[in-house]
Image 1 (cartoon, helix red, strand yellow):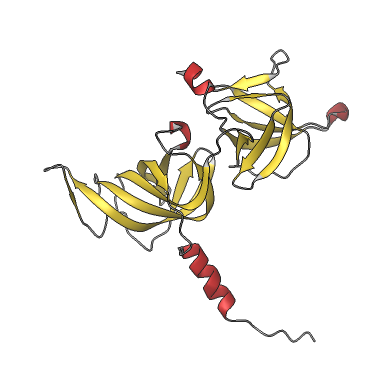
Image 2: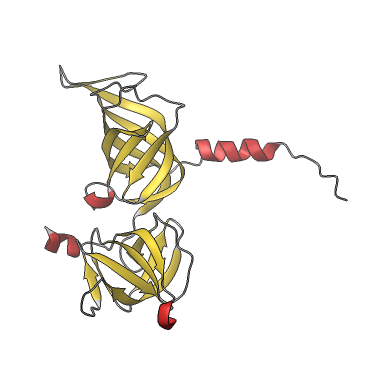
Amino acid sequence: LPGALANLPVRYPVQDIYKFTEHGDERRILAGTMESGTVRVGDEVVFLPSNKRSKVTSVEGFNVSKRTQAFAGQSAGVCLETQIYIRHGEIMCKAKEKLPHVTNKLKVNIFWMGKQPLVKNRNYKLKLTTQHVPVILSEIVSVLDASELSSVHKLQVDRHDVAECILETMKPIAFDEIGHISETGRFVIVDNYEIAGGGIILAPVFETDTTLNQHIKEREFKWDRSHIT
């Protein structure tokens, strides 16, 4: 399995960033685990969802011999050619490989385990690799009736239900379909600090009419005149 994952496009979720200053050490090291692919010194990389670009200048490790590459399954540090501002949760990819989707709406299959049902107009938290973003239930496509193994229409997803839904995050996230790279196609939903559901991503949903866009329109509809001339 690790060998097969190493042949897939690079997915390196950034877990943390470390800066060293002792003895003139100016390294700024990104830390994380290679979920898939292989990255080498000299590779041009892009970070999503920010779309910032740079080039790998070194692959770092704690108390290990010098290495020039990192592959799937390894925890590794990466130094970049340019000091771009990268935040926790970005996913580093090779610029010339197939990139993950970046959007804030996605079609998913979810298994709900929460004490309270999954409902619309309530804020939850979605965790996908190192990305943690607010999310809402946008639409329930169908719910599986476990007793008859048939789809039914419901207005909420109850405990132990399996449902196909449309989720909407409050900011864009980077992800893959579960059939392409499973490591970036799985997620969990947190409700009241407890894991309440888990699921897989079926496809991105690209729509201009989203809750986030509607919020921006409403915010900018009314202008307050300043007293500054």
